[in-house]
Amino acid sequence: MKRRSLARRIGALLLGLLAAALLAELALRIHNPVPMRLRGKDLVLPTNATTRLTNPGVPGLDPVIVVQRNGLGLRGEEPPPPDADRLRIFTVGGSTTECLMLGEGRTWSDLLARALERELDGCWLNNAGLDGHSTFGHMHMIEQILAEQRPDYLVFLVGINDVDRDDANEFDLRVRRQQQPWWRRLVTASELLSTVQTLHRVARAKDFGVGHIWNLDLTKAARVVESPQQVDDAIRRQQDICLPRYRERLVQLVSMTRACGAEPVFVTQPALWSEGVDAHTGVAIGPAEAGHRSAALSARLLELFNQELRDVARQQRVFLVELAAQMPTDTRLYYDWMHYTIAGAERVAAIVGEQLIPHLVARHPERRRRR
Image 1 (cartoon, rainbow, N blue to C red):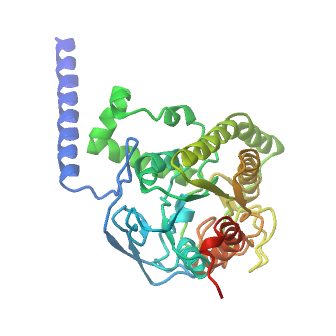
Image 2: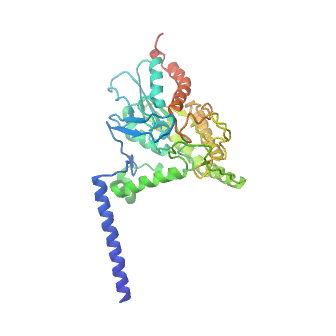
Image 3: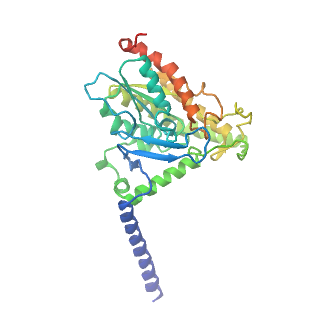
């Protein structure tokens, strides 16, 4: 009798959980408050949309930020007609490319587009950055959106979202949906499971210190001091596992970009992480807590990925923009460890433009504007 009673209770519990899951699925299909840009492996971008964001009191940003998306779901002007004589350029990256807390005309991509227009005739640039995207997501972006736009150049600002990433095998399969495992198809089809997946990705990004941290104050930041063994372990893990897979994905990005008729441009990734001091306040940055490790160690790990980018650029004959080494370590240029203020985006655009524009002018002399 006791076994039957226990079995009934377990059965009732399972039925209750199933009913709750079904109700949650229905409710989320009616209205999902969690914005999702990735369902399983499919990009889902809002098109022709305008978003108004309120600045939570962060210095260096506008009080109200207006973000607009065109018919592609990207930031920038609508794409020109297929037969238009335009140089089609996309900036590709994560949140440091998308610049979600910078309004229209404020992102470094916007400023770079204007600088290009002053020097080259017929340039069109769109911002294909997506918050949280790593090189895994960039491959999906090329496959699902950018390739059919017949780009001439894809400018990749990459690295920061690839630190600690070791799930290359899962994402590198990149098979069609009908060939995906049943559980992946289930996640893609379910609003509830896709939402859980999105929340998990957000939590993981914050744990690694790549989420948004509003108004970072170095004077109040917690301090972290790793042992030599902890430092060695962190570096060894990147070198043994993450960096070789990162290199493979970079080579694959080059191949995919050239396969769709475009040329890649690599940009090294800057961040406020440093073993030095803040140029604005003079506060030592290195001991400050950045995610689950110190800013000094974070800087060393990011530099490993930047060096990998430089090596692949040299071997694959990809034009490289050296942004990381030229971006000042200055809290006036960042509102957290990696995201730019208005002044920061202006500095990024200036550095990228100084190196990229002469390269494009040399490749397209017929488009050079006469002064």
